[in-house]
Length: 77
Image (cartoon, rainbow, N blue to C red):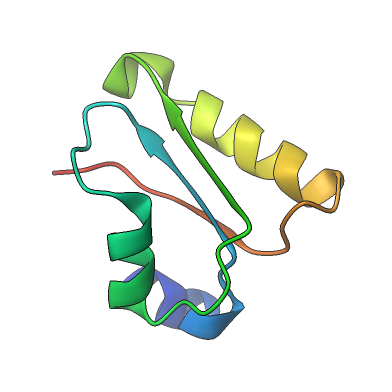
């Protein structure tokens, strides 16, 4: 939420999520918790921090192809 606020993005604008397989939380639960309204895209990448650029790449592809407009990349603690 702090990152969204800092970027000037309303939670309802988020329509995509990218994370790692080490996160056990269902995407839709996180999406609901931030106040999302229409999840259009999500992805999970293997290897956690060992694949650091992969979620960003997948988010960029989702936006570039029109699948989503605002994609949040996150890593579980």
